[in-house]
Amino acid sequence: MTAVELAGITKRFPGVVANHDIHLSVRKGTVHALVGENGAGKSTLMKILYGMQKPDEGTIAVDGDQVTFSSPADAIARGIGMVHQHFMLADNLTVLENVVLGSEKSYGIGARARRRIVELSERYGLGVRPDALVEELGVADRQRVEILKVLYRGARILILDEPTAVLVPQEVDALFANLRELRSEGLSVIFISHKLGEVLAVADDITVIRRGTTVGTAVPSETTSRQLAELMVGSELPTPETAESTVTDRPVLTVEDLRLVAPGGKALLDDISFTIHEGEILGLAGVEGNGQTELIEALIGLKAADSGTITLAAEEITSWATRRRREQGIGYIPEDRHRHGLLLEAPLWENRILGHVTEKPNAKGVWLDIKGAQDDTRRIVEAYDVRTPGIDVTAASLSGGNQQKLIVGREMTHKPRFLIAAHPTRGVDVGAQAAIWDHIREARREGLAVLLISADLDELIGLSDTLRVIYNGKLVADADPATITPEELGSAMTGAASGHLENEELVEQLEEEQAELEEPAETPADGPADAPEDEAR
Ligand SMILES: Nc1ncnc2c1ncn2[C@@H]1O[C@H](COP(=O)(O)OP(=O)(O)OP(=O)(O)O)[C@@H](O)[C@H]1O
Figure 1: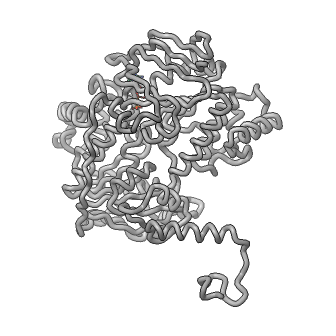
Figure 2: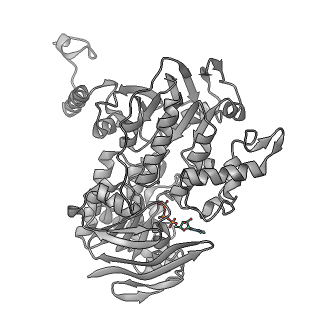
């Protein structure tokens, strides 16, 4: 039985055919993955299915009935729900308020609504608490609220746009368990992802689109991630080079005793000290919201530290303005490309100038050099394979991954000596990811120092020379990227471990802590409560 049938879908934008004669058939009660390079046309296709955009040609059938959607409300009425990558919950409201908002007619706003939320949560193993305040929830819980929200509106077909990009491995497993629950109840899930290993683990069917057209379907049990990637790009992929260490003993960035306090007095960063040397990538692991944003803002000069010092190449820059820091060689790939990285409504070449107004090739003396900026934008588009009809289109019209490639190209072009790279490959496809890694590694060979922040633990472990874990605004642990696994790092990020983490050590430490948690708390009869166990007895 087919839940959704998209046939012959074509969608044109000025200068681009985003979808060309696409076919997608989703069976009822399955997880169907949609994969393809950046700009291949995945989001466009999903926006069409969700009623956000109208196709120029083609038909949509839901449960065998031909439908036309003029708005998401039409799609929702036919049981289609979309969980966006950027969560859309109101932080200061409770889960119940968020879920009910805009859907008050279904079950009211009181006891009936609550009952329905609890029922859905239990049925699909979502563990959602109606009275929790959204601002107190972590990323994975917020995602479950988003899923519950679409189920509450009666969705039988769920579209998930890169749902795992922000999750640690344990959370990904939990999400997949939820998806399997949905599937076993006869719901269908369309899952967009660039993480091909995950796609193979969770999908029943896979549709691959390349340059706007369906190029094939794959059966997960008969396909490897490499084959899938090659189907996506239409050629063989190069084997990634193994990275040799390029770390020197020459410090580029030194942070000492950095402390940043929120208006209410809570320490957002406390006792932060580290050094990054020429040729070194320091990876910072942490669940989002543990001080990473504040640390980036303190380093780039968007927030003033309350105490402590920041030194760049032997000069103390703690009180310098952002522009001066940029001019002295700090590059910045921001975590939220829409808020800090791009002017969405401006053309690509203006975005190329952003943050580098006074630098070549954007400036000639005190004047802007528009031609210089435009020529260099064409060069970046070429070198970083930004898929666009030209440099005059707005940044908003690029696909997410191509926006990211533009930012990375811009920042790397200025040959920074210190690069803050926050999720540098978020949303980019495997081919582009490998290319961005190569660019960063090449710059590192020439002496670049990098602070890498990433939710992609494979990336963090694969690229970093040194790993530190941030938890509650403090650096709580360090780990050796040569030996640690993503699962171990994921556990350390939730604050379960501290100190130096080696494989076995970490496992032991976690087991001990787990055992302690499970034991009833009691004070040893003949020793201080905090003495090590063997001495206390
Ligand atoms: N509103 C728009 N105006 C103009 N062009 C657009 C618009 N939306 C998408 N495009 C273009 O359509 C093509 C397909 O984009 P789409 O966002 O669907 O790709 P995608 O497969 O989702 O990519 P990614 O993996 O990077 O998110 C791209 O070339 C993009 O630049």
